[in-house]
Image 1: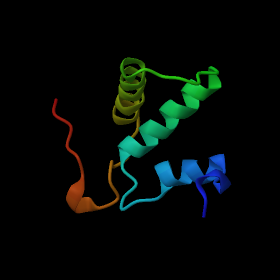
Image 2 (image 1 turned 90 degrees about the vertical axis):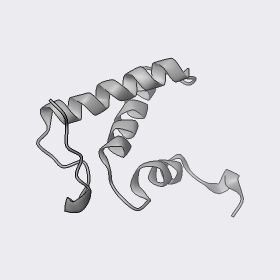
Image 3 (image 1 turned 120 degrees about the vertical axis):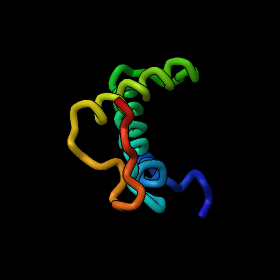
Length: 80
């Protein structure tokens, strides 16, 4: 299938939904991209992307009582 036949939804699924796990970082990346897109951002530097990603990731760790992995043997423990 030629690359130009993929929809934006196909790209989104490839980045966020597919893979071997549904780790917190994928959700944080997805929320970061959605937030930047909602501000009509089309180009993002690494510094901006990393800062926005870290905010989303920390917010999930601080405010959500959810495991980062669905595999109980791979749960991340946050240091105090």
